[in-house]
Image (cartoon, rainbow, N blue to C red; front, side):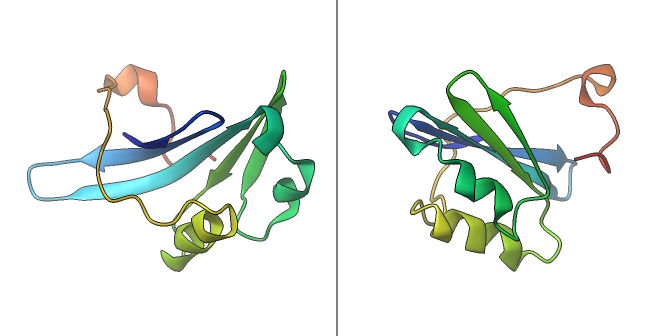
Length: 100
């Protein structure tokens, strides 16, 4: 689910959806151009990071749940209030949910 998007930032929540719940498996934050600072890679809330062109991609798992909130707060985004878009993935597109 796309939960935030502006000129240089995108935030996605990778979720497991069932009939009874929606569980966030990880959050991906993509920072580009002037937002793509390398110091954010070392934040304790970041489980994995990658560089692609002029963008930095940060991955955080919600264990404990406050970790993602803290990451978004430190990046100056705050908690998302609505879903801006979503894309369904088939089982063979998802991979192992325990991987970062």
